[in-house]
Length: 231
Length: 286
Image (tube, rainbow over all chains, first blue to last red; front, side, top):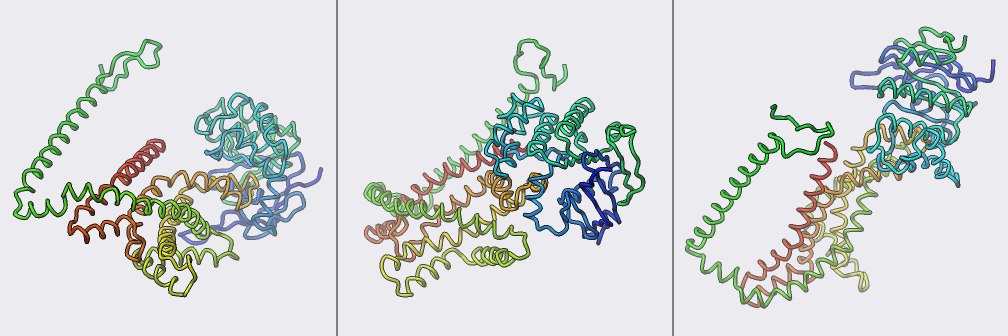
C-alpha cells in the first residue's frame, strides 16, 4: 500500500454546548493513502462533516492525534494551520462559502495571491476556464446559480494544486443533474492533479465512485469497505 | 381571471398593461397618500390658526422670528458654522479609525491577546457610560490644565478629542455588530483557504461588515454633526456660541432659530440618505 497521507489515531472531538458536553467523534483511527478517494457516509449527525473538519484542521481534536503529510495538526497554532492548509489542502463546502464581496476571479485568486503566486490572476483565470466559467469571471456569487457557485468553489479549492482535497457534501444543495456535473468535475480535478480526495456524501452513487467507504454511526466508525470503484 | 394573474409573463407575448393586482395596489397607494396629505394639511392649518391665538404669540414672534435680526445675523452664523464643519471633518475620520480599532480589539480571539479584548470592553463601557458633555468638560478643561504649550492647550483641540473618544465607542459597537453579523461560514471558508486570522478579518470579514453598517454609522455621524455644538461650552466660537453672542448683543432669540435652520439644512438630507441606504439594504437582503 502506498504512503499514508492523512492519519487519525484515537481521535476524539467533544464540544461544550448549552446542554453540556457532547461527544461528536469517539476513538477514530484511520489512515488515507496518497491518491486514494475516501467516502465518508452515515446518517445525519453521525459526525461525517466533523471528521472531515478534523482532517482539515478546521476543528481541533480534543483527544488523540490527527496528522497530515507527516505534520501533527493537533500541535499547530491557528496561523500555522492556516498556512499548512493554504499549501496543501483544498476544501469544498456544501453551501459553497464564496466571499460575496469578491468576483469569481477574485475568489479563486485570493488564496493564490496570499501564498505569493505572482501569476495568481492568470492561474485563477485558467482554473475558471477549466470548470467552464471562463465567461463568468467578473460576476459576483449573488449573480450565479448554485451549480456555478460550486464550480467556482471547486476552482478555488483546486487552484493551489493541493495534495489533499476535502469535500463536504459538495452536491448537497444542488439538483441531481447539476450535482452529477459537479462530481464529474471534482473527480476530474482529482484525477488530473493526483490529489487525495476525502468526500462526505449521502448519495450512494457518489460513495460508489470512491476507492473506499467508511460508514460512521453515532461518532464511531461502524463499517469500512472497499467500494465497487476499487474492485 | 385570478387577482394574481401576471398576464402572460414568460410566455413570449408582448408585455401587457398593468395586472389587476397592480391596479388594485396603485388604488390603495393613492388612497393612502390622499389620507396622509389631508391629515397633514389639517394639522398644519390648525397650528397656523391656533398658535397665533396664544396670548404671548406677538412677543414670541418678535423674539424668535424677527426677520430683521435673522437677515443681520445669518451670514455670521453661516461663517461660524464653518468651524463646526471643520471640527466634524477632522474628527469623523479619526472616529472611524479609532472605532474600527476598538471593534477589532473586542473581536480578538487569541487567549494571549485577551488584554486587548479587555481594553476594548472597558473603553466602550466607559465612554458610552459618560455623557458627552462631561467628557468634553473633563478632557477640554483637564488636559490643557496640565500646562501644555500653545497650540496644545487649545480647547478646540481637546474638545474635539473628547468628541472623538466618545463617538469612537459608539462607532466601535456598530462595527462590532457588523463583524458579528457576518456568518460563521465566511470564517470557515477563509480558514479553508488558508487565510490567517488577520487576513480573514482584512479580506473577508471587514469588507462585508463595514458595508453592512454604513446606515447605522451614518446616523451616528449625523448625531456627531449636532454634538459639535457642545464644544461651545468650553470655548470655541462655533455656531451655537455665535448665536449666543448675537442673542446677548441684540436681546433676541432669532439667531438660535437661524442656527437650527442651518443644522437642519445639513442633517435632514443626511438623515434621508441614511434612511435610503437602510431601505436599499433591507430590500437587497429580502
